[in-house]
Image 1 (cartoon, helix red, strand yellow):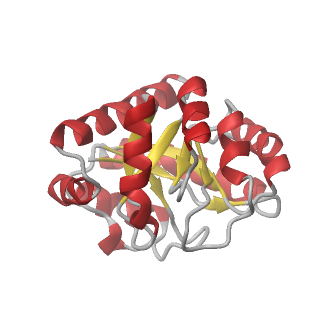
Image 2: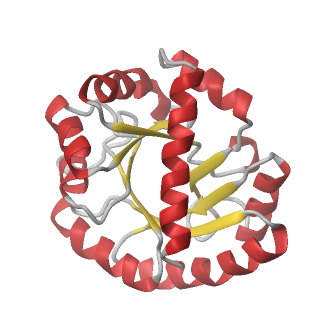
Length: 219
């Protein structure tokens, strides 16, 4: 299991990073990214602390821990600039909180994220448009299939459009608490409900591994 979208108590998760990582290790995870919610007010506080603990936990718990960030409710025209600043502070994987149907995300967030090659993953993209999926393919960004309740309601829509366009998919949990972490089997059940199967999940995990390799190489 590889999970590149999780939250600690540095945003709205309930666990400190060390417990989050150890819980993931106990679930059989091989890699995890800590991607707390950030905007203009807190990215310079959150990211350095996650960077610091990630290297320690990788060494101590023998699991690859990657420092990241999820840009959340950032005004669309500010996304590239904030993402670049997050990179400079050490975020190795950057997500943008997509236009999920269960939260009132600013219109234009999906397109702004997918237009920026600084971003890695558009999380829970909601009712993403076909032309936006094409943009994801052209720029090599990953679209998320999620196990998160509510956000997962549009998994089938995202997966169908992505497969038609040849865009890359990735599986994440968007975990906020221990019970949100899943096993490989539970991930497969989520993917099946979205009209896909084990081959699709295996490809999503391989896509995740490519991001992990990129992050580790750039460490």
